[in-house]
Image (cartoon, rainbow, N blue to C red; front, top):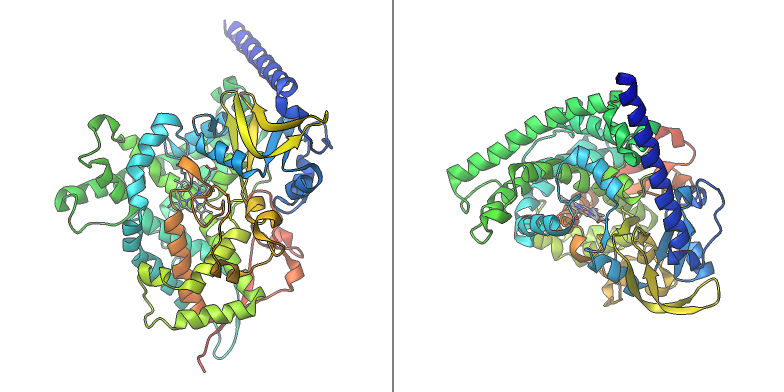
Amino acid sequence: MFLKLLASLAGSAVLFGLYQILKLVYQVFNSPVRHLPGPKPTHFFFGNFREIWKAENSVMHEQWVQEYGPTIKYQGLFGITRLYTVDPKALNHFLSNTHIYQKGERERKLLARILGPGILIAEGDVHRQQRKIMNPAFGAPQIRELTEVFVKKSIELRDIWASQIPQSGTARIDVLQWLTKVTLDIIGLAGFNYNFDSLSSTKQSELAEAFHTVFQSGTALGPIRILQMWLPIFRLIRTKEDRAMERSMAVMRRIGLQLLQDSKNEMVQNGTEKGRSRDLLSLLVRANTAKDIPASQRLSDEDVLAQVPTFLVAGHETTVCRIFFNLFLRSTRSRISSSAVTWALFALTQNVAAQTRLRNELLSVPTDEPTMDELNALSYLDCVVKETMRIHAPVPSSMRTAIQDDIVPLSQSFTDIHGVVHDTLKITKGQTIMIPILAMNRDKAIWGPDAMEFVPERWESDIKNALPGVWGHMLTFLGGPRACIGYRFSLVEMKALLFTLVRAFEFELAVPVEDMGKKSAVVQRPLLKSQPEAGNQMPLLIKPYVQS
Ligand code: HEM
């Protein structure tokens, strides 16, 4: 009996596997994208992935665009053709038509196991409903209220660094490590009123530990996990990682339920309007009960609960990029918000005039604890933030899959491999599309010949271009209905950190600039070429700034 069951399960798995392979072959040989110009695959299994991995972020794609034109194809794993275009009209089309271009189903399923039904995973009406309720929590008035948290935590970090510097001396500090801690503390407090305490404590908090385990186990891509993604029958197998993940998920759920209950109790005690917690979760709980939201459209407790790890993932942990943006790239753990501030400090070490100009502007503010409006009024700080986000965009690319056939408008026609000119692009269901972010942010055709350089002053002139980004005429936070909901949060957080740190210290790179690498196809993460085994780091020499 048992053997019969096993045999029929194995038979179904083989049939399903064959069906998946045939579907793939059909897609590869029927996709109109195969007629696009582009590089020849260099490996039968990896396609063009190996050259992409070897090059720095998006450099390979940029070279291919130079060679083959703005709309090209290349090959991913299993011979799957990927479409890549830097055509702004086409990108606008992909980002606006979210009913056609969605996140990959397999990747969403994988992440849903970890996050539950959060906004990152939702599509269609469910996404619209979640976004409608969540949008107000991320508006300017709410971020204004959270600024105090950003500034207080920045001051705590400033004081820790100051205490590490010997009298009248300089300290070598790995700023990446500390910025990772401070941004975790910030998203904890501002996101759901949870104190990770990672700046002051050497021990990981219970939630941080559970979250870390869930992500380590949930995103480990061993052979079983890959089989589980492609063949549902393998999902019956529970691996060691699955068991560790389940234990930690129970911890996350217990803490999440407690945080949710605290927010609800608070609302019952203080009412929806009056003096209350300002964290995103509390705002969400209140927004969910707003009178203009019909009961049928409110989020369930499960939906609200799923936003706790979602904020951690989307606002802090770029592992999500690893899953969504490119599933089979090398494993890396790097943090999104800390990555932006780290690269800002790096850029300022390479442009001392900009560092001095910025500090002078920051010192003109008479308080250590500025409000959001005071931070936003600092024009050169704004230029530095914009230029960092342009040239060091923490998320370099994204992916979408077409769920139906479509005709895509183009601003520039292309010539296919048979010499035929097309002014639109035909796409069939199942087509994978790579959305370039970094490549668009530093395209010389858009930004001029100094596009690859860090020049904050460029933002002093009126910049206009056709990029469909939600912020700053660039794609750093993407655009359209699925643009980053937390962009205001992260910009003010970044400004608060730079304000506090650059006023207090002078920064210099602790190693020769040639030793700094940021070779990764997922996230721009710093490492030393001479010590890649030491992991991600950004060693800077820091000394207190003394006003003359
Ligand atoms: C430097 C910081 C950040 C960058 C560069 C960034 C970038 C992005 C990008 C590129 C996306 C689109 C991903 C895609 O659909 O392919 C996204 C989505 C999202 N981000 Fe951010 N993000 C940042 C910070 C934050 C923060 C602080 C939060 C929350 C506290 C946040 C919450 C989200 C959420 C919830 C989504 C999904 C939105 C949706 O699908 O409707 N992000 N982010």
